[in-house]
Image 1 (tube, helix red, strand yellow):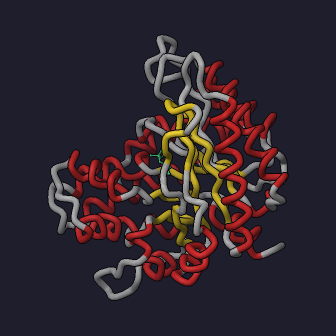
Image 2: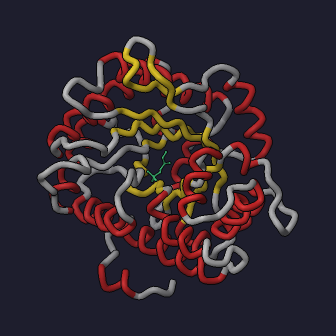
Length: 339
Ligand code: 13P
């Protein structure tokens, strides 16, 4: 097995998933403002270090996605952030796209940028300790969108990104996110996600990306958040599995879902159900941002110097998600608040 194939497996080995802590400074400022904490680089590090040094990291978090600012920061113990993450048995990763920008030709849609100079940035990140990367494309659902142009442009960028990352001996997380916003049905989400995934894998193949050394980070198949028809967890899991089975090549070792605006419990419960019904060979895990951090952040804001309670909350959330990767989560376990 090649080195990158090995890393891809380790990131989501049974019982583990990924912590997406790669919010850009703009996004992190919004998150901190929502709990009335000033967004200084010191505070951003303080919160992240609280999570990265929690016990739950050891058993449940196989990789952490960092942002450019964080990967270069030194923790209170003098270690760099990647060193701290490694000391907990987890792998440091880095977001390398530079954001979703207006797509010329279809200005209401977005294309993700960041290919210029990427080869050089990758080599710098490798030296800083990163062994995997992330690039996120976003697609909105409406009557006329996503357009073929948005689907093709993002697939092209994701594939060129992934090829460059493997050239630099790291694992690319390929994240095509069909957004949850809107009134659309679960069926519409299924159709759009199928189209998006098909286009991505066509371009990944064209760019000779080694799929065995690639992790897919997709959305679950869900109705829009303003849809009149809610779906139960069984329907969500069945539709998600069907969509992935039909559109993701079998060589891909693992799938790590984004949470995309689901509540913490929804994200855990849905992943648990997906693993209960999993009739594929894919490892099905998580790469959550909000669904791993929300409660921890709220608690931390009450006293940013006190790590203990925040770490307890994060440990619990990590453990619940860890259990869901092998369909061992339950609402009873959820209620036991200590990890
Ligand atoms: P959420 O789980 O909050 O959707 O974040 C995952 C992520 O990394 C988005 O790019």
